[in-house]
Length: 216
Image 1 (tube, rainbow, N blue to C red):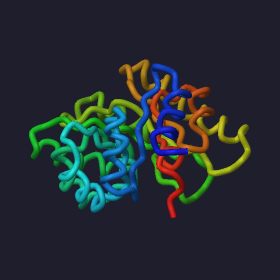
Image 2 (cartoon, rainbow, N blue to C red):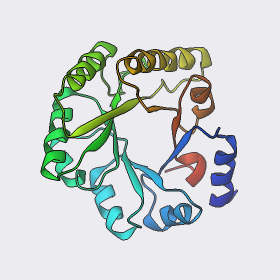
Image 3 (cartoon, one colour):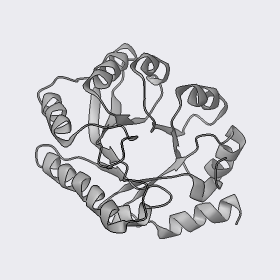
Image 4 (cartoon, one colour):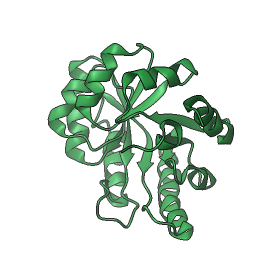
């Protein structure tokens, strides 16, 4: 199928309340522009250098989501324009984002990345760490950012029961924190498991290869 057909096929499967973040990492600016021209505005990148190359040559109204592991020394390069950092996986990183947001005189929206997968390769906070950080945030510790939700990645396995259990951990935490202050975004699900993630309560999915085709 063509890129346009792939994109429309994904859109047709998403309920109205679910946001699509198109994962554009490793794809050239021309391909991103094709999807932009179809009406898509939210795009996800996972490498700072790649994002810095693409951002200046693409339309200003693109809503850039940073979805990869972010090193603290790289925050300053994207703090002036990034819409959402979905991958806050440490208190140290959160402090750096708060500092750079202040320097840029803006508030940056962030998601706390919680490690729900059983795989060792995934980054993320523990449930307890996420709760502690959220309480610090409610006490005014991070005045230059908004924690708008949570992000998590399930294990890369075929066992749907395991994936469902992992997504449920994040959904339960999302509900618990939302009782303290309403959260907007529960970002779960990628090309291979976004429908299951939506069943488990996700309202934001990160889809790349199902739109752009497989990356090599």
